[in-house]
Amino acid sequence: MSKKTRKKSSKSPAGKTTGGSSRAKPERPSSKAGGPRANKTSKNDKIGQARKSASKGSHEAASKPLKSAGRAKIASSSSGKALRPKAATAGIAEGAKAPQFRLPRDGGSTVALADFAGSKLVVFFYPRADTPGCTKEACGFRDAWKEIGKLNTVVLGVSADSGASHEKFTAKYKLPFPLLSDPDRKVMKQYGAFGEKMMYGKKVTGVIRSTVWIGPDGTVKKHWARVPKADEHPTKVLEALRAG
Image (cartoon, rainbow, N blue to C red; front, side, top):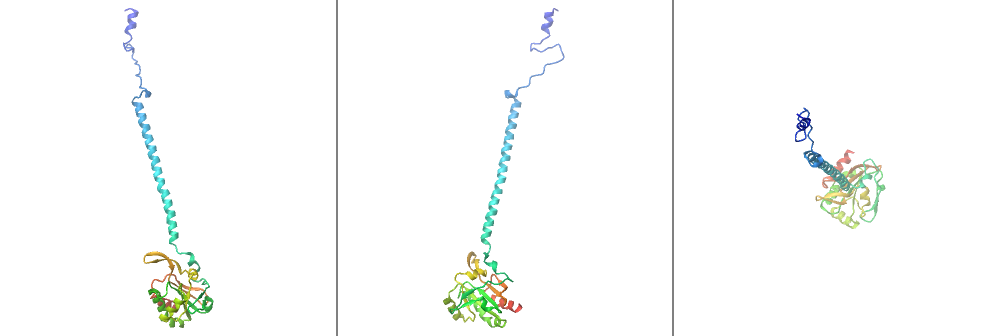
């Protein structure tokens, strides 16, 4: 065989050698050509972007309730402030000196706290003369007045009513103790007897039925900040005076 014949028979038509044991490696498809690898990479990129977007969305969703909660807390705090008793009660604490006062009474004269130095004094604050609850309370103190007097104790009633209204109230029910007028509620505020209260299930601002027992030295012995039952209250005050 000639050299030309051997040279031709050593290559296959596809350009690969047939005589040797080694074979040429097949070419890998280029990712730029849009083959399977390119598609897989593109898919992974989309999944990654979707995960980032989901993570961002969940982070924003988680942070929104925190802001809302903060606002809710402030609102609760604001509304809680509105529901708290007014600062008028701060100066009327048991064991502290009772605030001084001077007020007009039925009949035209005036009455001051200093007038009762050395005596026990019971001051009951009531919303309005000649109304059912206030009438029961005033008449209860009237009925217990002799027993209260035996304990060296004086009784005073205070409301925002006028002197003329008090005179009618006193005459109608034969009340033996002075009734004082506090039309601007100044003394009531000092004694914690004016502020927010519940009336027929609603919050209102007005006179709070309450009572203060002041000792001979001018200090507060006992403070009934809210009187739940007007008709039973005078008896409870008498019992406290006897025990004290």
